[in-house]
Length: 247
Image (cartoon, rainbow, N blue to C red; front, side):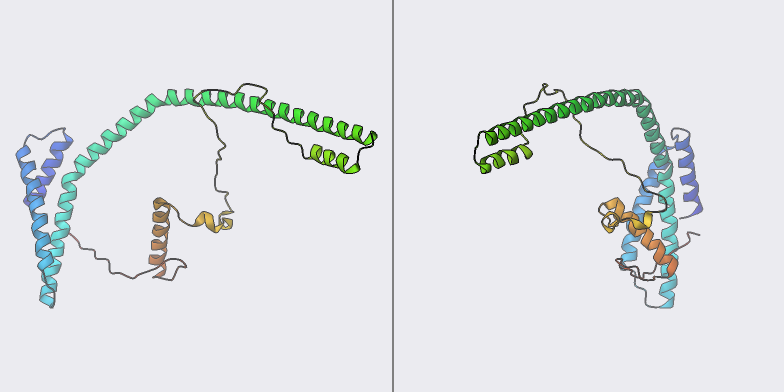
């Protein structure tokens, strides 16, 4: 990519920064030219053969041209991407500001609902346990009466066992809460400093794409640092990574 083209890219970038382009024709021409060059150079490189030192030099020159073209394409889109990101970020901030009081109100409301429901459920559970205890005692009294009346010990023992294992389903003493808000048990977790090496294997095994990506990134960095030293559970393949300067 020559200096004239680089200057044109800079001019387009400046125009975008100022909020518009007064020479939009140049922008369109540059975009079309970059697109055309990318397609043409791909076909050229696909047909290129390197079997001699001279052909290697020609290939290296083409790699330098590719690096410059790649930079040109990235520079062409950089300002537009930056503007789009800033616009997206601004929209997200405005959305967050608008949502903040709603989310705070929602948190307060569901907290109050949860506190009331927990107290109500506790009261219901205590009432149910009290009824079951009363039912157990009544069965024991019945067993004592049968024993006093001279009934067979097996009958008395069976009633006593039934009383001990009694877990009669009681009808709810209060009506069921109705509404569209439901609650379920959840858990908040955090890593404990100094105890990370005691984490169980089933927690450490990656199960999501993000987790896998993070593990591979760490393994790649370690392999680079150690010169490809084996890592249990990781397949390491040595490759050649090319880096070509654009100028």
